Length: 359
Image (cartoon, rainbow, N blue to C red; front, side, top):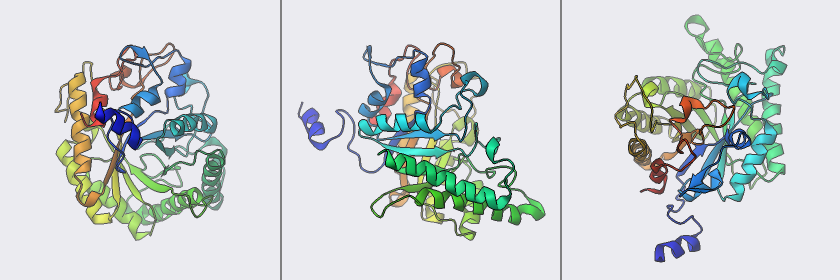
């Protein structure tokens, strides 16, 4: 009982740890779509707002993705539907829950990832100088809109998993004789996005810039990528990494990469995407050292959180779970059939959430 009243006094949810500046969070970008399709989230069998459930379990930061001109039909692009209005709406709910949030700019009309970095259709005929201006102006316009509406993000990701560059073909990274020119073009576009994110800020506004790649367990590629950004004096605050063990390596390889990146670049590091299944027939168990059960999912998350917290010098700054709200809903397909969600098929909170409260 004493702990309950102390938590209220200190301003954090009962059962959750105090906010020590370490980000414990989730990407909840699909929440509006799932709610519209009739999805219901529950805690202890009772219906409850998903953001509130996650917040009460210790999450203090949420990520929202934004597409430039997304297709509104979910079935055409598997949920790449988030426009500025959707982001603004969810950001308001996040702020009302007392949490911080991260804006994930895809710079595309659809999914941007290591295999896809397609330019927005409306930008396809711009020459390079005009594209550079557009990236800055678009980013500044988004941040200014959010700021005016009282939901300025705390962190901004300039691009999503941009290991091979972004805004292809102009911003695509290449090898051989084209390596240096392609890196120079890419860096110009990246700096334009960073300038745009900072342009609307007042002196008292606090906003941190993240550069996000997909190689959580790959120290060599991480070093290669950020060395070249350093050579081009690209200024940013946070290194974001994706870590899905079946794609990105063992927990030990993640640990080695986090330690090496923090030391080499003097930046805070964040596992900004991660997930693990709680059920399902996973035939490819590569690097999946945890049981595919609700308790196995919880242990995976606890191990990832601990690994990031242990980065020397306090440089490990957070863990963000990918798509915890992926419950079955009528007319929607969800990633991995919902097996990597933090809620069960009927929307009930799973034990994995306890890892965010340190239990």
